Amino acid sequence: MTLSSRWASDWRALGTEPPADEVLHALVARYAEPHRAYHTMQHLGECFGHLDAVWDLAEHPGELAIALWFHDAAYNTHAADNEEQSAELARRVVLGAGASAAVARRVCDLILSTRHLAPPPPGDAALLVDIDLAILGADEKRFDEYEMQIRREYAWVPELIFRQTRSRVLSGFLARPHVYSTPYFTERYEARARSNLARTLARLVA
Image (cartoon, rainbow, N blue to C red):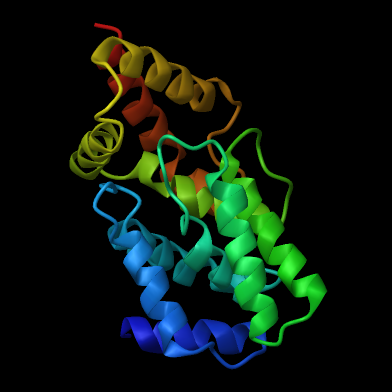
């Protein structure tokens, strides 16, 4: 499936026709911004692969798909409101495409769940967060590449501070009873995610 056909299909799953092509082009341009290394179309493509595997588990799969498209639309490592900016952009586009205010609100809420401040509520938010965190359970080679990509995005942070901050983030996931919130992701990725996190934390504190 091409990017444009995926875009059109996901909007129709939402119950609307897709917005003008310029909206897709502008969104793809965001994911190609030069300061990004992980939060790129590579990440989005990996997310879509996981979404396809759990599509039938979603209550509103079209909303989940559109939330994925926009969940990292705004990404600036100097900012603290990326998810809020991404959600607001999604809200405007979803409403502009003719969806209801209730649909737009649910899409926004899904995007805001990717702040990862706490385990998400059951349902589509749990699926979206697990899709976003699936990288933690990737094979060792891909996970290590992901860690290097994150470091490049925070190249402006001094090494000691980065190690301390990154250790806190990863320790937070490891301290949870479960990294993942849905049976599908727990069964397939939990053990490997914990192994990856433990291995990386050992390296960060060395």
